[in-house]
Amino acid sequence: MMLPDLQEHLKKTRRYSGNVDNIWGKLTEGGILLAMTDGPDTKMSPADFVASGNRLGVQPAAIRAFWETEANGAGFLDGRPKILPERHRFSKLTKGVFDQSHPKYSNPTWYKGWYPNSQDDRYAVILMWAKMLWQKGMPLDAAFAAVSYGAPQIMGENAVMCGYPDAFTFAEAMARDEQTQLRAFEAFVTKKGILPALREVTRDSETWRPVARPYNGTGYALNEYHIKMARNFVKFGGK
Image (cartoon, rainbow, N blue to C red; front, side, top):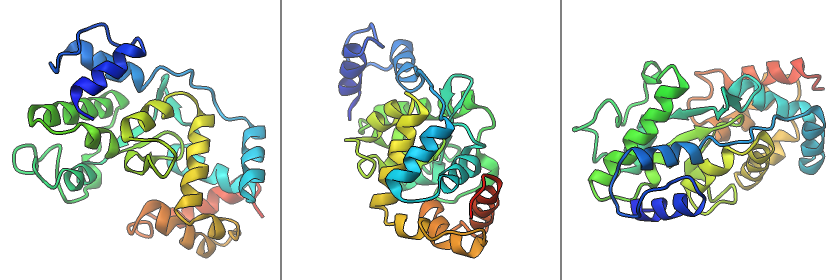
């Protein structure tokens, strides 16, 4: 997606009042932020977790374990989807073209201490990435693909797997409500091949390894995702 394509979409959805002119400016930035945050931010209910469990054939507590582990139980904060930009993923998606010129924003090495603390600063990273790509005449997709979204914290690079045509459309959808985030989660664990293992989890953290490994990546054990998920599974009454 190039900037004029994005401006055209934002204009059609009444989030951008400027011209479709391939010029980066405050109106474009505002339109992007609005598309990524304009809600209605409806939260999950216990019935939603039960319904999802029935659709997937898993214990509702298993799904709640993801919500708690990945995003402290909520997909929104201050009226915006919780996000986490990953500069090492941005580096990979852009083949390292910005690693030398913008090492703060693009770096092949993961570093826990890099993450911006506030959601304001995290959204600012996305805008910076998009502007960097525009300045290079590159598609903007990587700016939205290198970010995890909402309660399940699914990366935008998995947009197609979750049923969306591109990363921006996925980011826009994750801003609607937690029910939309839930449907993306259901599609992801199904198409990623995680669902069979998720149906077999117990209170034993070892049973969560086949779930956490493909969901959280090779660093899952270092960050004890399988242990955290098992703990939260127990917290919500998992058997």
